[in-house]
Image (cartoon, rainbow over all chains, first blue to last red; front, top):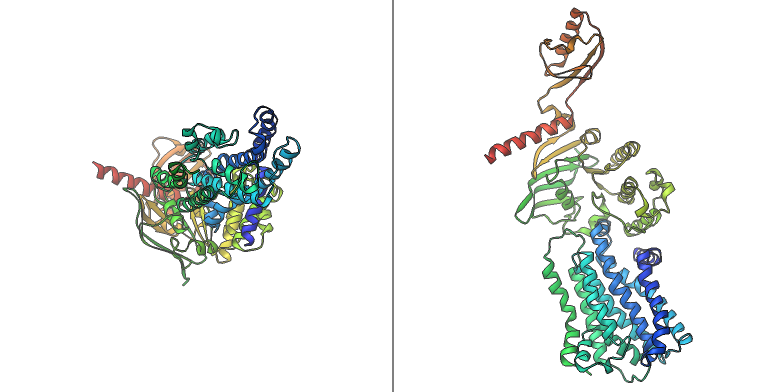
Length: 272
Length: 311
């Protein structure tokens, strides 16, 4: 346990010391929040009521999709995992610690966004804080599971960036962050169900008592929980210590795509 | 008779259709420094990495400190120390953090003395990415020995080190041997192997071409001693000079260089010839064949055999 805590503490510090992590954890999401908060708040009447879950989710996406895969890919490619292996660092710690370290940074960003969103921009505060936190944790788990999976399955840093972008950009446009998915055309609403952001927005708004959302969105909770479980499970299964490990990349990616099954099922069923 | 700590029996390693190591067998005893030598692609790193548990053998049996490396990797990590040829630490990790980090996983106290001993005392708060290659390798060595392993694997340990750091590292490896640590060393530096190793094995195309003490290995070769002679008047450098029992190898920078299978007799013949020719000795060097020469002899013989086989 001592080693795990020590490793965790080191990873957390790296989140501030490492410039690329600092950028993805704090600078990019917070600068975006302060810019978009001022602009969209005055232009888009739909934005303010869901601004806080939207900007928290945006921060999760920056950290989990744009940073986390890179952490795994670069450590594997540069031989850091080899050093870990020969010194008895377990694979479970290697996978879990960056995810947990990032979560602590996201908690800090979430508090900044929530307080500033309410105080500066007049965003809707969560009426049920614990429900909001539970929804945020579930959404983070879903995105972190995908980020970890991309990191272990992608053959290179370039591939991981491309794969992450396939999810990141549509999540911002169609995931309910800027405009509610309910005002999208029917076909796009279906497509939006493929994105964890859509389910995350529903869960955080409903459980947090934000805006007009009411009740418990069980379907989205199940989709996010299943997505997170599959993401982390497949990441553990496909984990490689060594960039030189000879496993066909195509097969790995096909297996990794299984993590999309809950989202695909939601889109096929067209759940309400 | 010391116990065998590392045992390799019929080890085989393949990468697809390519056989990297075939039917390799050797033992390394407790407190021994064993050098694994060979040209690039000879199977050294495959053998070392399989012993370290980083690769799975495709045949044969491996045992390190009584443990099968491919099955008990976690247990093995506590008994071995490894300085890999290609490895790294997180770029933002400082020297002190690295020592604390790995000491916590090995469940031992932080060894600040090692940091000092390896000349990293002033670099304790410097991040890994900002260390020179030599400092990074010294840090890797400090981490490898921080838990006092029973077996230490060193893959090209002095690559990128300056002369003083090499000397310090050699002294440290000898100290470890004195304390009972078994050291397995893979190197391209034959002088290093000759100085450090108690025994060495030469790998060629995945097979053990020769094994023994450096002295045994060099003695098993052509057994020709090199005699280099420099004189006041340079009479030995003339074209028509012949010394009985010595074969002229080259004339170079004022030295006549001979090979001889009977150096005592040849030196006496040279001195007699000089006296008769009215010349005087300035410098005389008698050098036994080096491990490097023996290594080159073995590798060229193997290359020759392979090209004949190819025809």
